[in-house]
Image 1: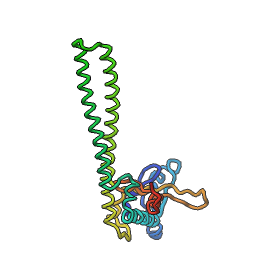
Image 2 (image 1 turned 45 degrees about the vertical axis):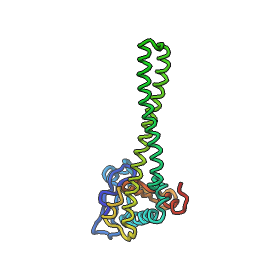
Image 3 (image 1 turned 120 degrees about the horizontal axis):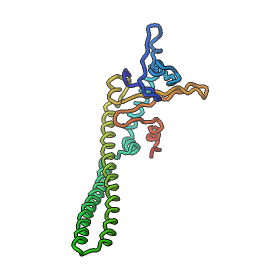
Image 4 (image 1 turned 60 degrees about the horizontal axis):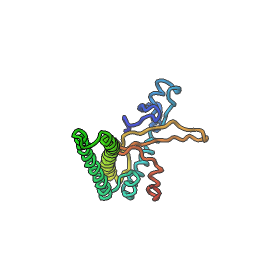
Length: 232
């Protein structure tokens, strides 16, 4: 079911799926291929039973789907992708600022050409030309940086909204998720990262991060914060 999805959180390699007729199905497990081939000194043993991974993944996916279904606005805000009307207003403001900066940059090109011609024709001293040209060049450099920043912000915001919208549509396809299937996993999950177990507390604790298609990893704490109204 998890074919190709399960990876070691440390070395990034795929975890091997191990099964045998000599033990029960519930003992089927995944183990880091690097640790298995090269030893613990290269990468700690990342071992997790398949049934544990399946149950944990199912519970996390149900939590994500609940957030999408019942707290969509908060989910969008937490992921930096507000609803279309709010986004439209923000993008419009940024695009106006971008256009204004581009217009000013073009105007500075014209002004620079004019003062150069005035200097050549003797209407303006070389010292005056140098002073104005330095000012124009500094403003141009600042405008180019501002334009680049605005272009990146606009593109990133549009991409983020599109990605979150796509993921929300996928999540809503599985509102009543009862069990995992390869189809559901491939639809929603990009990768599952298994961490090495921590036994420092005297108990075996193991973290698993699920990276979802289009939006990446969603920590359980963030999801609970959304549900409890504590998300930023």
